[in-house]
Length: 430
Length: 107
Image (cartoon, rainbow over all chains, first blue to last red; front, side, top):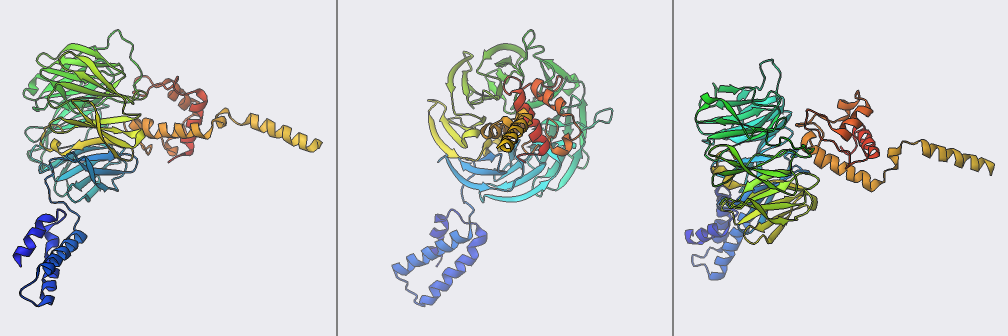
């Protein structure tokens, strides 16, 4: 009987071992009923089919790898879709995730689970292969983003209200550490730009107080927090370089950015790109730029200029400005294709119907695409042959070939926002 | 007949005395609510519970003068990320938005 069952197990991609047992029993019963030790081919097929049906009826989990999976946030309906980038299809929709008006996602290091951080303070753990919500905790009144530790055991969430960072056990979502963000005068601060860093550290920025903090959680019971004050006014977001060495906070209240070298924190905070907008009239900003995703091409980094229709080019060896690229609007996301040859940019309201592509070598815009109103996010497949673009007002995700710029697929999604692929599981700062 | 004329006259007066914002057609009202939810929502939260910007629920706004709110939306608030919406939104539209916020419309 074993030879009958083993191919079935392979055919049914939706099988969890847990569900196999009752199915096996059913099949055994069926075979027994025949009471004939020499089962004909017809009966054999029946047995296989019955087992198939039993298995698919019971189990919805997939047996497959998760390296080509991803999560698309549906901001208005508090749901996410789990998609796969090989066949470009949607696998599951997971609902009940609360307010996702500013959702972000990190992945467990085995890329089985996604952690979704909602605006309403909700932290949700999703099983990518089963399409289920494993656990959800509402850990604050209002939150903005999160990070997973280097070893994958801790998930940190940055909060607006009350400010601060809370750290959870990645497995159980139980609280393990609480890091308040109160400045020297006792005023609480909103926390932005939370990332993981090597050495089981989390780095984050205090929006109201203008501080950068590094929390060492090698012993979660006794976090060690290092504080860098007076980094500049209204830091709105931050990023960490892919090697985990430099942490850079963008400033809304000043033209410039604040940099910390995590290999040498004694040097303190250094101001870079000081006065990049000097002499130019700053335009009103209808959407905060995002610094997540370090657009690095060779030694040049590409960053959004706040309140300008420009992308800044920075030489990462000197942190000096190395150029500017005039673009269609105020950049929101500036993302390098994984090979670093092209930089894709989307824009703030009211110019958010456009995506532009910059050639990293010539620093020129080489392509302008019009996906539709409300382009909110872009995510490259791990090796960059395609990019997925969320188009809010058209309720769809569009997939582009990054070589030909042709639109190669469209998937319906309800007011899609952030797109996150599981390859992030293995990248520092994402 | 004279009565009807009088009634019509007073109706006309009533219509005139209704705030200008009521004259916005429903299509534009829907556009404004969409803008409020999705674009203002980037900072204030789609459920208006706040984010980088303050919460905009009726209970947060009842003691705030309407003219101050109208001016903040039209001209922005210096020293904060709140941008001016003048140019994109008319004064009449902003007045309607302020009323909508106070009523908690679209929540």
